[in-house]
Length: 319
Image (cartoon, rainbow, N blue to C red):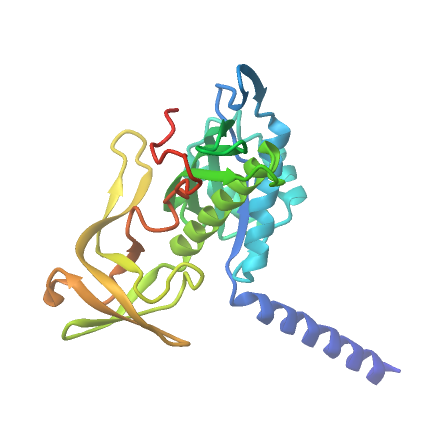
């Protein structure tokens, strides 16, 4: 009887160890509900001369946060803390009313949630419009959807309370629909949010698993993998050597590490465990092993889809 109990105890212990080992290789991350600040955000709908404004409600912000959590889970790169647990800890700590500085709050919350990273963000802008116009030399009409979404995000390392990375997504999108299309303003806004969420996910992956220089050889560099979905052959990336830590003189809060641009590279080959790139700007001697590589601003992930319908204009919308 005792032997059987020992066997059961050993099996249970083995399962616990196995369970822990499965998750040990993935960083744990918790996403706090994104905010919108004090000013209500507005989605604008234009139909000929009629205009209707709809306020971006807290419920929609919560749904946006939920979509980000789901997208992070789907990357299979993180152990994502359940939102119910996160909300409960936020209420318990009364983070909004506490006078504690961010590092102390983050460390305490990380301990309670067993999360190595916290994601915080604010939706600054969400605007969308739809306009109908007759196609030149035709009786048909086209519908043009234009949208703009701006979100600021910070990733905090709860082990030291420091900001590990920050990202601003400034997405503008344009979509032209034929007279027989099925896109509505609501579905267009959903697509706008999906694209924004994907860029935030890429920013989180890049912040926690940054693409780094492994080795410099003549005019080539070898990189770690990370942003598999964003990095392709011919992708252009800026290279930054890591400098000193930056400290806010007023709050003494860490703003992350200084990044000093050392050059620019173009991806020429993608291998299963590393990436090969060619240096196209800067000197090889100035690029150090361990340097961080980031997608160049104005890459395809930030460019709006240009109107291609006959009679449409490529002039950007004025917000």
